[in-house]
Length: 92
Length: 194
Image 1 (cartoon, helix red, strand yellow):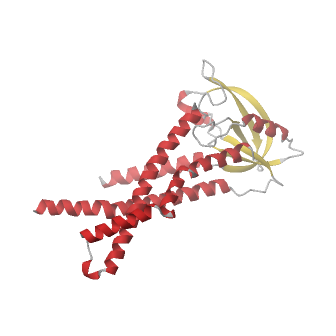
Image 2 (spheres, rainbow over the protein chains, first blue to last red):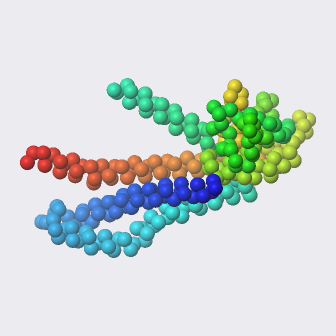
Image 3 (cartoon, rainbow over the protein chains, first blue to last red):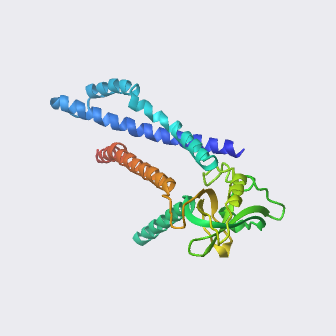
């Protein structure tokens, strides 16, 4: 029973942290893309329809990149940490 | 208002430090002098300093538990008492359920003053005699002598991870302020002017 409660709690925290981390990583990437567009087109710097289209297209590629997919580790690392602690405390 | 904020900040700092000091593992070099079980009454006020019930030791109807204890002597001659309870899958997250094995180990390493066996006991918690609280022993390792103090690397690792997470949250908040809040404020003021 306690194990199920721990698991539910961990899932909830991981989901919350995953959402926050996704927002952060995506926001950083969008900022980087905006700066890249402004550096390439100094005459058309600033928010525009063309820049937004460029960013939308680039973000599709970003979602498939390794860096974007590494955020899924949020669901793996805590479980590994729990298993590591269980091993160190009870069998070491 | 300023002083209220400062007071709340200081109290929060003390609380965070106390929480870490209570929860993080600490290591002490001691000699085990006795191991035993004692029927102990767990008052509701101090129950947070004991394992949560139904994680190994069963509480009887009058709120008593048969708790394992480890009596130890420090190199300086002062005594120190540990409890030995399962934490199970509840707080603090040690996931300990080998207290029977640990007790057998402690009994095996029992030694008299004349012929001491020095061990390093990893534990978390506070010894407060006036509240009858005891640190919970996690693991026991033999050491060469009373002067040997093994590095407390688990606490260092946990502190490093916490600092990294704190830095990440700080960066996330800064990014949110710059990209989320600042444009929103600008939009609101522009809307207010028009």
